Image (cartoon, rainbow, N blue to C red; front, side, top):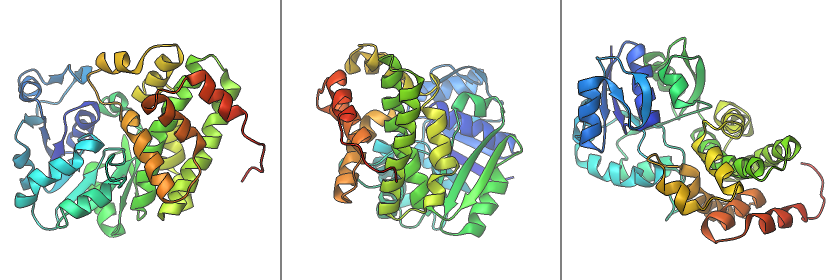
Length: 329
């Protein structure tokens, strides 16, 4: 039995706590909101972020971030834009070599850096891993079969951790491509918003299939330019995650895009939501990273124009459709 610390008691953090506990580990779940931690300990539920789901009483919760440093493995599930600040708080107390698995999917807005780069700067003593794949929180929490990728520089360590937190209902495949695992998870959120917009505008299944396919091409271009392996981007943390997120209202990013396509205003959608919709913030940072690497990503650029530059959806779509024909590569 290992001691597993989970930072972030949102839907995904709570689901990962369930998966780790199911694998017979001692699990401590940290919540930024003390009332959420208290409710989990008293009622063994998290109605704020994962309603209608019972939690095993052995899952304990705390509002104290520093209690995480005594864990054998730490899962970082704080939203991507808060990862740096969280690491800065942990830094004076973090134990050398303790594995820190990034479960947030995003790119830092101000710097354009992926999460492993952020953690490498703030917690150089951590052994960094990336846990990513096509996994809706509610299904993982309810022990429905799921699979994901755990990427670490040390494949042996990745396999060891996979055997600690994985199970027959939460299968973990090891990889040594930490860049690819992050690019897939970040970009798919932006493409999911685009896919939702297509559905919300009533453009049909043909259009959505075309968008997803061309989105994979964008994802692959950025990943390879950043140093990822192309096969990683076609795996669970790339195409697998993209396929799931671009086709279901369970996805916060897809549902946000759907609402935008139907004419709702972004500020109104976000006000009505408690959980973070990562793609809203990642759209700008993906475009920033793409520009720095001279990578053409027209779909992601279009989403960023709509979300952050006040562009009209119909005009942006018309501009995309008016792009010159070219070879499919």
